Length: 95
Length: 281
Image (cartoon, rainbow over all chains, first blue to last red; front, side):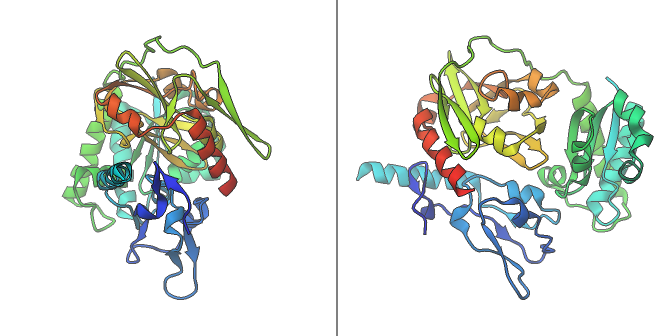
């Protein structure tokens, strides 16, 4: 679905998005209420919240996790993502 | 400077127990008044005098940030903030598992108090402007609905996380864009990075807090923190008033600028990003 890029790299090649720890999440929905990019979606059933649109997440943004009282949201290792972005840029430049 | 402490009372989480213990010990250490958040919420007049005379140390237990949210509704100036869950995570220790603190929990609270008091007494990072950066004069303008976003042109580069940088003589000045300050609305606190700390490009250069969000400042460059803007620390609203000029945040001594620039974009490219972001919201 992603036609956008981040630093010249197609967004869907950058695995930056929140992961919900369902052992901690209490489904207070603060993160979903906060996030203006519709990364999360509310569902019926046990998992009342899911990361439905990971590519909508702003790369390097962790603002939703700063609303999370139970500390249930985690993000990838930033230096690894930066290295990946640089690698993809280099590969594109070499083409 | 006189300080009062507005802290999470946290009766439902161990983070709250640590916050409460920290507040009591910090108040003793600095002879400061404790502001009970429950009473403040119920009868704010009780603390009118204390809030008028003191700046606040705000202590939150967890990221629900009840104390911060209460503080945001007050006129009082916030001087320092502590978020227990972050401090504990950064320390590599484990939170107590019970609400009643044992020896480890009490030691943890005391360690955080000691660090807080040390920081309060330490001189702030050198924070005077180097004066080599003149106010911007030329702007691109992006219009979206009733909003107008001004993007400074000459000398300014941007990352896609809405942070600008301008460099001269091995020093860079960093701030947030007009678009981001409007998105955050009233900025009430600048958690500035420590002087002489090093930061990688895309690392964290402190954070900004408004009633809407906590915004991590994603560094556009690699370097050493030379100074934080004391005018902004004292009056974060300056960022809303003049984000590209007087509301600058940090100055860095650059250590990798030629390579860093390859990962940044100019004003016209940033204008396209702003258009896209504004349209998506």
